[in-house]
Length: 66
Length: 159
Image 1 (cartoon, one colour):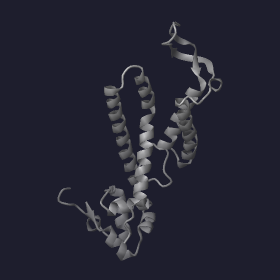
Image 2: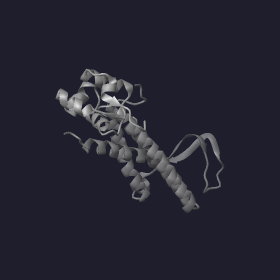
Image 3: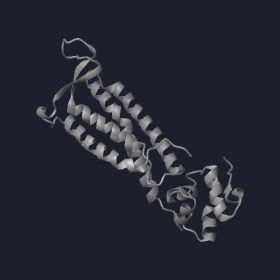
Image 4: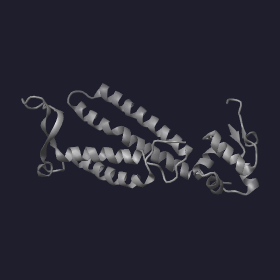
């Protein structure tokens, strides 16, 4: 699954640390999601989108092999 | 999400039990503990037997045990469980996935090693294998989990 969290973070001027704090996870988790090493749960995905004021589909995309 | 984990505060007690027990186990294995420090005590047992003497098996009777050896084993187990099953300072779903990864890794490596031991270690030496095997899952899990945490905390990808 692809995502553009990194872009959205830049738009909202947030560091990984700050975003992690807002959705109460560790910075490593945000880092792993951005690196596509970890697919977040629906709850976490929706929390992140809420911070960015976006729909889930606008931040997370399915890939060909998903 | 509900997880079966103990609070973070017990982790330090876990390390306090685990590390001395680990060192003690090494001493015991190298036979650096003199006999007078390792008294045999009598205690009620559900079942006991003795391979090396002609005494009969005992069930629900007083039996003998090596105090230090058993104490080290108990401390190792309790310490290991506390370290394994206590939360990290900040616990989240990603850490939980690392836990699963470490547990799968530990069980797989543990049984792979046991398999090799079945093939290549014979006779009474296998008793040693069985003894170590009681603790290898805990040891491998902790090493693997710490490694994964370390790996992900140093792996930065900030712009």
